[in-house]
Image (cartoon, rainbow, N blue to C red):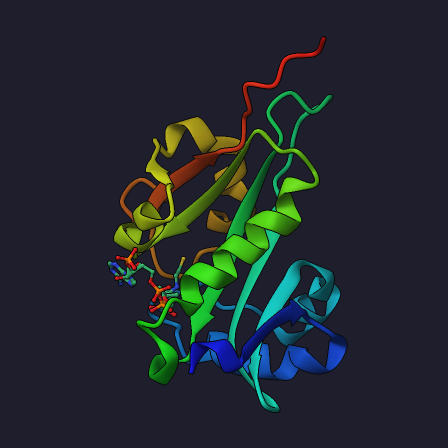
Length: 168
Ligand SMILES: CC(C)(COP(=O)(O)OP(=O)(O)OC[C@H]1O[C@@H](n2cnc3c(N)ncnc32)[C@H](O)[C@@H]1OP(=O)(O)O)[C@@H](O)C(=O)NCCC(=O)NCCS
């Protein structure tokens, strides 16, 4: 049951099971080294059932040149174990990540994905890769699968975090 699954901040000892999960989905996720996961474990959540990690999600803050005029955060390395899919866990993981990211008050959360229909269910909208160009360099520069982000089938999507709150 999905209710048996607890979503929590990742700890160092989760790095190995997260690595194994990401490795199991190399056709739809960018590979990550174990060292990278350890170094960024504070930007990772895991979904745990009993003693087993059954899902994970991470995020990274995207670069800005100079003062932060368009702060954005990218959600990445989202995966739910295949026998746990279709029961709302992917949605719970993304929403939990959004809650953590929201405290930074970014202007938007972006994702580059092969499953745009899933993110559309969560309110993300397709955006142009050109608009995110300097951000794409963070991941796409070192891609070994595709020649260019513009011929790669990954879809760029954005969730606006702007509120209508006005100062009084
Ligand atoms: C994508 C993934 C995380 C979804 O996890 P999940 O637990 O099955 O998703 P959920 O059950 O929370 O689905 C939430 C909604 O999205 C829909 N959905 C889920 N996967 C979908 C897909 N591949 N295509 C279209 N819609 C999808 C569900 O039907 C559900 O719709 P609802 O709003 O009507 O309830 C999971 O399939 C996975 O790990 N895939 C492999 C890794 C991957 O592709 N990660 C994303 C890379 S950015």
